[in-house]
Length: 370
Image (cartoon, rainbow, N blue to C red; front, side):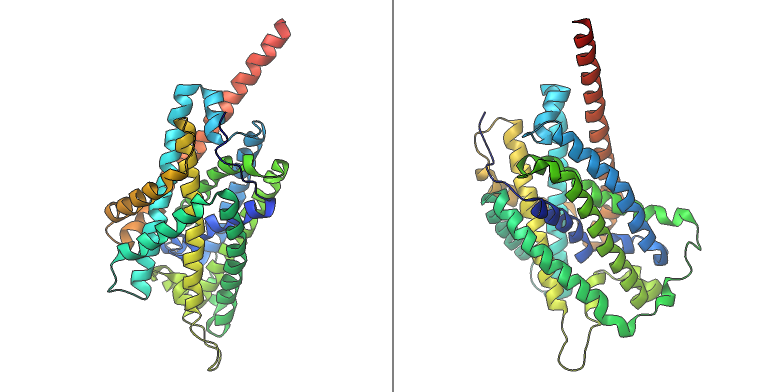
């Protein structure tokens, strides 16, 4: 069998890229806030989303560990047979591609809205795609090393953004809690789980860990740390903007513009923009790598690096045609996109575990009859 990817990554790099994967929407649109009718309760939905995601991440890692050295695309064909397994692989491929399209358009819109309204949006998208394709062609190991560095930068910038507007914070804006009932929590929980369903990419990464047995532990760390970052963001945004927090197109960028310490520490939004760009580039390069590897494993290709740049071109083209504006993108991410991602991730996992259960029962019966 041809070895398509020879790189190995550490547990910390695995954790870092998963956190970056989840944090990209936070740095851009943060649809948990924009889709909430009553923003005071968003931090609660973050906690619920993380609590639900931990079992999902554990199940994905445990399943991958049962098939050492194989990605979710490969062991799907073992469990479900070549035909159904490949069909499921195509569904996973489509989900990865849709996520790539969403974040490419999201970054382009963010730049146009925030700083360069006269620049064509495709200019930013093309530059992002080229940068991400170059990183992805260098292999998983390079992407994850960069991802670990970006993770530290991202956490530093986010914590600065959360803490420094303290003069503008009014924590009474966080009250009342659950005044509108539990049903108010449903839309942001759905949006949150839609993003966390992207952790299905764990099934592509576990075979390349230098210590695969650490996958479960680091996946849980990734969920917890990303949950803390999002909860802090929700608290800071609501404390500063109050009930109007859901009306800001780029909430974190708007929060960073509130920061001013005397005459010597201003314009931190430039750091937030750097966090946008770096984290989105890492996420997109990881997805390009996963998509290309998926195609190679589905169609028995001997190499997959040559797929990167055509994939980047397709992503940019579809990003331009799928959405009309940032409002259209936000609405899709919070509703139809989130629901479809949850369904695909949940049904994929359920189908694979059901097939594994049937396979185990058949083996036991054969062993007993023998």
